[in-house]
Picture 1 (cartoon, rainbow, N blue to C red):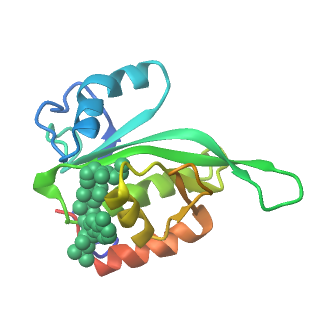
Picture 2 (tube, rainbow, N blue to C red; picture 1 turned 90 degrees about the vertical axis):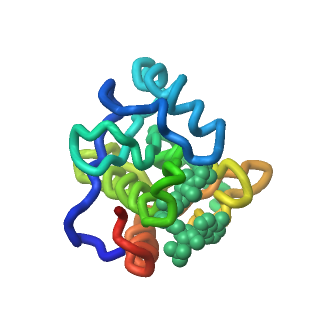
Length: 175
Ligand SMILES: CC(C)(COP(=O)(O)OP(=O)(O)OC[C@H]1O[C@@H](n2cnc3c(N)ncnc32)[C@H](O)[C@@H]1OP(=O)(O)O)[C@@H](O)C(=O)NCCC(=O)NCCS
């Protein structure tokens, strides 16, 4: 994929016009979340849910992810310090659109939002991989494991741009 090459998919807040019923990523928990819980989380301000579509206002969902303000504990300094971070709580691509770059595109988009000057300060992106496959995919993009027992992984925002851009360049344009 080459960044900046049109057409780019649209990223927008989950809305009533999006067809959740048809979304299928192969992981029932992530399909179920979109269909039954995502709107509730938005209403309760538990998460921001963003979807990727072909163009603004389109109903078909290519992929989705959630972002939430979070923090991570830095234990490698004399006193443990909590630093602000952005949690990408869920991330999934419809199987009909897999391996076209949408997954990496969504991570890049989450990083870009977290780094926007008006966004709350954040040092890293955090992710909760669903299983070993997902962890492998995140590590390929430069994410590192936090200390066990958590499965959570992180990447400093200072490095994600170059890591994701390199991964994006090595793959195809979404779509
Ligand atoms: C994981 C997921 C988000 C990837 O989305 P995607 O749009 O297919 O990802 P991209 O197109 O950006 O990247 C695909 C590349 O990652 C590689 N890849 C896929 N799974 C991988 C894995 N487990 N380990 C390493 N690389 C992997 C592919 O081989 C492909 O590389 P290629 O382009 O060189 O062939 C998608 O498969 C998905 O929704 N899976 C089910 C839900 C899930 O597990 N989500 C993870 C977060 S909980």
